[in-house]
Length: 405
Image (cartoon, rainbow, N blue to C red; front, top):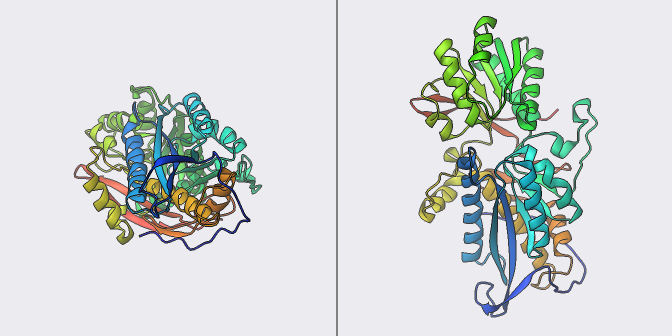
């Protein structure tokens, strides 16, 4: 299903401890000793955001299991090392060090939260350990803090993502609400976290450029569940919708309390696009969310992923980031494949450095479509989708590729 179209060229290399060797034979093929490569996985596996995190873990696990079953990299057995970051930057930083200390780890998938990624990027970069997030959308993670002024500089060479940026997502959301939903007056709220604040700022910039009016703005604590004070402000503002930069644990009660007072929709980004948003919100009907990529259920390229996921029997849904996670994991697998093929079937001494070089060059047909990365480590797939809650489920309304400025 996935075809590598680039070849990594290296000089002669030798096998050392960056990969381990098992005494057993078999899964690597060819009768030789099997080398073990570990792929780290960082996501919130417990807590409010665990629905998304478990979908990420399961999708990475599926990629690893299928790579081993199909002997995608002869002589190499892959293992997944999942760590729970609890959606906390400090825990993510600790997990990054655990991955670094495990010399078998040649790549890391995750995390979910942009704020967590900020604590992981530098240590992973210092260790030349590749990181690919299927969910981070904070633009500064790949283009630096001055990207808004056009001064785009990649902060960390080891960081990649299969999700597009908030710059693109916020602009897409604003255009959808203004042009498609025909809503011209919005109250803007964010949760003050890097993801939510960045997304709200991007939305505001494009919405006002289009001629839309920001009727008011406010910040909330993502741990709060009583939003009556801000709902009162929204009602007085005359806004026709609320745009919320944040995630579903707070977004769901915010929406429900909003509907108790005034019948207007709440719109958010991919942090809202979860089945749990609807489970937690009895009045979600009509709410809108954007998410990265096109719904995997609508992609021919994802049919095998969906079937394999079902066959594997995971009790948790793959959720919003399943396809992107599978592709992120497979990018590391294909990079390892290229490195091993260039070194006579063995892992080289500087395996982490070589895998990093290979990831930057991968290009294959993935679950979400063509997978490759630009000079910043951003995905070249800028497809976005707008969804609306209808009849107790998210229904896709518009999918389109968004062009970067």
